[in-house]
Image (tube, rainbow, N blue to C red; front, side):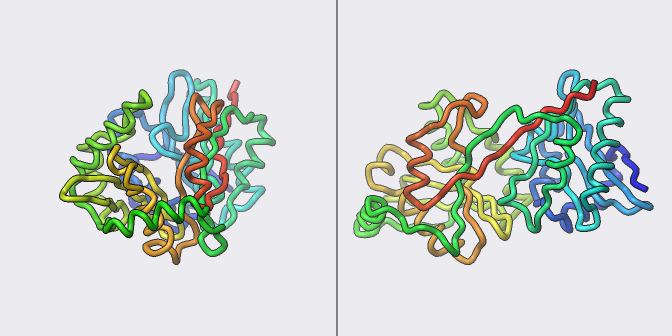
Length: 311
């Protein structure tokens, strides 16, 4: 028999243990990461237990008259242990819906972990959502490279990388998050956007997850030309942020940086994720941006959001 209970801070160690052993969670779902912005979100996370053993967790927060899993994370959904199978997942999500319904909440927005980030197949939740009447309400297009079978870079991309190397540009590990964040702000301003993380938040997370959040950069005469902030999930490396200055774009610094990360630094990993290229709730594809990623051999992985009416 399964039971559902609200998460409490005293449960942090048990929560983290489930995430570490889950089929589809990673360190984004550890409480040390989730709670860095706890003041922004009223936590409504749940734990699913069987005979006192945690078999799944649901990162979630209150969102108006509903609940979301989880606006502060790239993806979340039900994070499940190998012990939670198909029929039990149906039961778990039905109980989760009833729990929130009893709290007077009207709907659940659900962002499942894309299969690219699974350690082992874990899409029982998608079937359960279908059975329970949830509907797909948003789909973003992300891009990723399966490194063992990656298509070759395009000839144009190869030439730009060769030009950067011939000019003497080199990739190194960076430590100046302030310089990086300033460049990122400048780049995003051109698109009317701002970074998801403030500088103080990046510093906090970088300190909490050493070796998992890594800054790589290309400089010339001390000036930052291009940078990538990588989230290292073990099997998958994810480019959380990419940025290049005008001079960096002219000198192909970002092409060199990505080539080094894909072909050398993370070549032994299962995949390399380059993030989303959609805007306005997934309804607009930034064709120039996705083409840049495709020139490195990346192809599409979708990030979905489901809406489940609880009334």
